[in-house]
Amino acid sequence: MKKRGGALLGLAAVLLLLAGYLFGPAPFAAAEETKKLIFDKANLLTEDEYLKLNKLANELGAKRDTDIIIITTHNDQNLDVVAITEKFYDTQAPGYDKPHGNAVLLTLDMRNREVYLAGFYKAKDYLGDDRLDKIRGKITPDFSEGNYGQGFEKYIRTSYKYLGFKPGVNPDNIMFNIWFQLALALAIGAIVVGTMAARTGGRVTVSRQTYEDGSTSGIVGKEDRYIRTTVTKQKIEKSSGSSSSSGGGGGGGITGGGHSHSGSRGSF
Image (cartoon, rainbow, N blue to C red; front, side):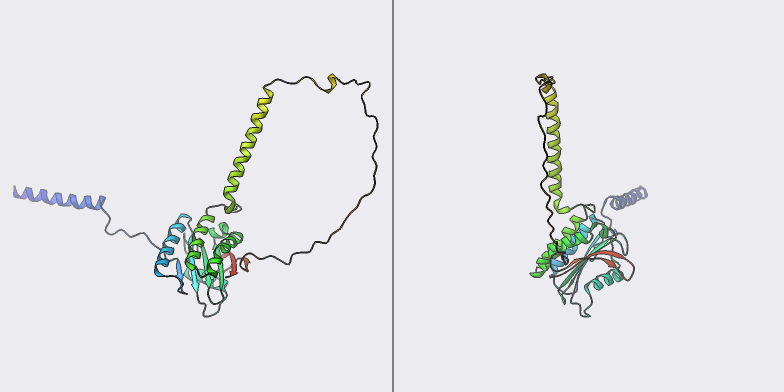
């Protein structure tokens, strides 16, 4: 009896352990990876700001399969801001899907007061030069006023938003496009309904010929008088080139490692 009771207790213990393993929290399960996406070498952010921004970049970047990265530097070697960005991409190997994969980088050069945005792979297609120019235009005023945390958050959220729209679509006018298409559909519908309603009243068989006397009606006379033609020429001055907001413009390139990217550069 004792042996049987001991066996039952042993079996019960094994079943409890098995149930805990199957239905309880896995004690050895790896926690979800949180990438380091904010590289604040210039110490512009507080610890709370860093944690908030790094979490936000991880969450929103995962939804777009693209790493959203921020780099700040005092640039002690006085390198070009584009060179800093390209070297970081080549050496740090960022990218959501694989090393040197989908990524958008923002580099803030505090020495020369310059900002550069670059999109790689998927971000190169979805965040081309024009879209990066728009993002830079939205965040530069914050950097100029020293609101770095606010500017970085706006960069992360706007990059996430723009990555959700196919290339060639203006994401800032998407609501206008929706309302315009809706209004156009309603107008076409109204025309169709109006036409159908008009036809239900029967066809009109009375025309001009019903009352017109063909023997007496006709053109009395016709006269065309040409006076002159005047042509005025005016010289149109060519523009010397336009720049986007904050003294910069679009322009990507290729890193030393052979990775092409879109780009937008400007001062703040």
